[in-house]
Length: 178
Figure 1 (cartoon, rainbow, N blue to C red):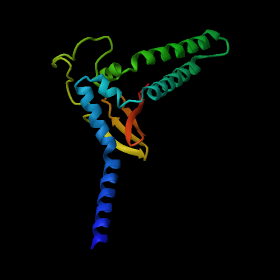
Figure 2: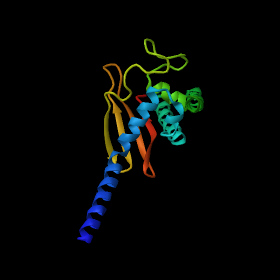
Figure 3: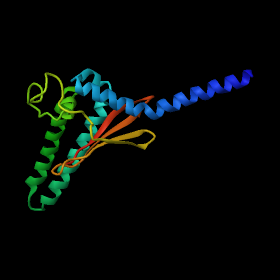
Figure 4: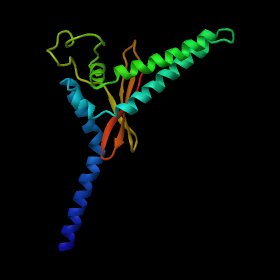
């Protein structure tokens, strides 16, 4: 009788732990949505791994620049190689300046950089529409969770990647249509 109560308690605890492990990225997504909707950069910063995110975006942008430049570089045009190097340095500085809690909040709110105030037609600090409203969310692996925002007819999809950090999750990559 006593053993069955212990076994039942252990099974219940295991079910709760496994439920949390499965649900934790969805909880993080909801926390990110709430932070973006309320324009709370500090709360968003707790759920983003900024050094990793910056490096991943720099790598994407540099690869895109090199791909585009390799198509244009010929052996006689040495200025194109210089332009590619300069473009890479500018891209890194741009990403350092834009990938901040406020910058990520603006990006997820679909607001332009340099545009002050709230989106037209919305109250101050609030976003028109729901962040990740049409997103498709799934595990890619045990430690990687992906949020895919389908693009419109003129836009390509954007992929947000969460990585497991201890028992929680953090935004660690954004795959942008470059």
